[in-house]
Length: 427
Image (cartoon, rainbow, N blue to C red):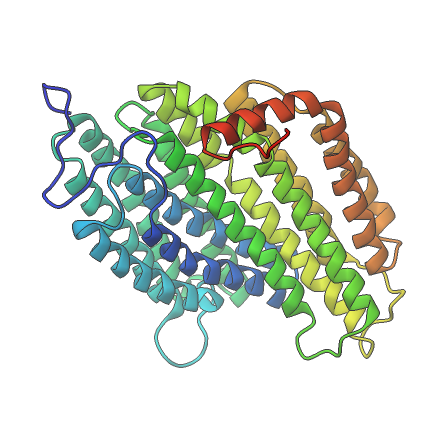
């Protein structure tokens, strides 16, 4: 920030101002993460154990952190202008290679390059490019540059631990299982250092220049994750002949995804944007960091787990050779299906509590109800378990519309009027 109160940036960079929206390049950038999320689901599906689930969630947390870094950068300077545009293309290419490497990020496959090393190298390149471009964009803003220097320490610590995990010599463990355990623990520590380090350095110095861009950016990544849940429905019946159970399961899966979309975009995203827009300075940065950077992760993770569960349900109801239509969905598939929605709702509850300081009781009750229904669903046919989940999710939406109808309508009308959506004649 200059003495005259005008932010200066490097030549050919365009600063973001209040009211700015997401750029087309950021939408293009997200396509890489569409593929990466698909790879995370495939990683968990290939190892349908608790250990495989842990690997998938650790991978998701790391990918999320990379995405968040560039969400902060894109809220400072336009992503499609000057050197930032070129840098994002380089990041996209690097992230795509990382996404390709996800299946062997924890355990190297025979032949070729070392998968764990390639993945760790891509991660380091993505993070270093972010800091370099952000430092360039922060010219004239001493507070932001100090934060970037502080943030570099946990980033380098986390990257060092990832490389340590990637370069573990086989002789360090007696068995492959012990080697995998040690590598996984190093991943956990790497993420703890990176996530915890950014929280520890505080919010002073960070800035959110456009509340509208910030909320739209995170809304779009929720859409990306929901898209993965729809992709999982199709992948679950690949090469299987169409049948009535597949048709019904598809409708039910869309109903669950639609309910999750409604839960976020109908009211919550609008109200949260208003709260963020009214906040200023370090308060706004802390609010954006806590309620979006941190508390959107469980929402995205919940959707990815739901995608895994939907994939398993569709394989159960569509594959009559290996599964009977009356066979219950059990084990990891069941826990992913119901646990994904539970985790998504818990993320919502934390988001609302941090952003608006209130609790949504229908969603609290729905979360508890779903947890209680997991044992029941385990005794139902897979299709019936999905139907029960869809009924509860849609029921939650209906209850909220009935209970909060007037307040909901007023909020949405004000939002639509402000954003240029006029009312139809006679209304």
